[in-house]
Length: 219
Ligand SMILES: Nc1ncnc2c1ncn2[C@@H]1O[C@H](COP(=O)(O)OP(=O)(O)OP(=O)(O)O)[C@@H](O)[C@H]1O
Ligand SMILES: Nc1ccn([C@H]2C[C@H](O)[C@@H](COP(=O)(O)O)O2)c(=O)n1
Ligand SMILES: [Mg+2]
Image 1 (cartoon, rainbow, N blue to C red):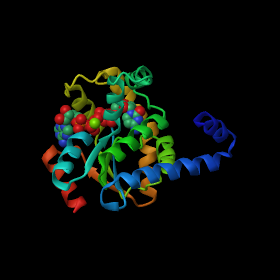
Image 2: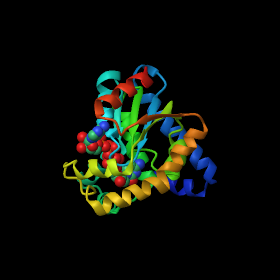
Image 3: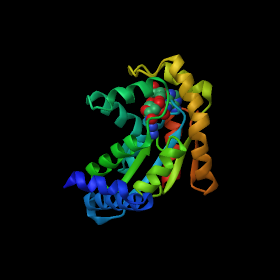
Image 4: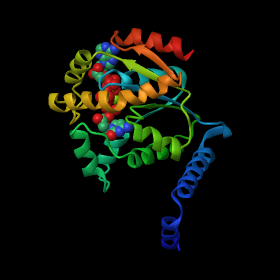
C-alpha cells in the first residue's frame, strides 16, 4: 500500500508533490509544538568561528529559545552510524555543504521533538538551496536573521584555537569553509538584507560585549 502511494507520488506533478510535503511538514510541526502557538524561528548566520554557537548558548539561557545547530545535527547523524553518515562526514571534511533534504529533515525532526514555539537555528540556511528548500518544505519565514560579522583572520584564529576535536578544524578545511562561506552563504545573507530582515552584530568584539549587543537587539 505504502509502496503504491510512493509510486503514485512519482506520477504527480512536482508542484503538487511539493504542496503535499509542505502541508505534511507544517501539520507535523504545528501538531507537535506547545500551546498551539505559531512556531517562531530566528536564523543565526556568520562565518565559521564567528561565535554563533557560543552566543546561541547565551540566548537559550536568557531568552528561552531552543537552539538548533545544523552542523551539530549533522555531526550527531554521523555519530549515530546512519546510512548517510559516511557521505556527510566526507562533505564536512571537505568544507562543503550537505544536500538540503538531509539537513532539513534533521531540522524538521528536531523542531517536532523540541515541542517549543521559539527556535534559534544556527548555521542555516548555508546556501540558496538550503533557503529555498526550507521555505518550500517547512514554509516558516524567520522573524529575522542575526548576522555575526567577523573578519576572516579573527575567525581563522578562533577555529585554530577551538580545540574541540572537530575533523574540520584544520587549516586546510578552515580555508575551504571560509571560501564556501563567501561564495555560498553571503548571498543568502544579502537576500535577507534586501528584504530588511538582517540584524548585524559586530562579532569581532569579546564574547561578553557581543552578547550585550544581542540582548539589545532581541529586546
Ligand atoms: N567573541 C569572541 N571572542 C573570542 N573568541 C570567541 C568569541 N566567540 C567565540 N569564541 C571562541 O571561538 C571559537 C569558535 O566559536 P563558536 O564555536 O561559537 O563559533 P561558530 O560560529 O559556532 O563556529 P562554527 O561555524 O565552526 O560552528 C570557540 O573556541 C569560542 O570559544
Ligand atoms: N546548513 C548546513 C550547516 C552545516 N553544514 C556542514 C558544513 C559545515 O562546514 C559543517 C559544520 O557546520 P558548523 O558547525 O560550522 O555550523 O556542517 C551543512 O552542510 N549545511
Ligand atoms: Mg558552531
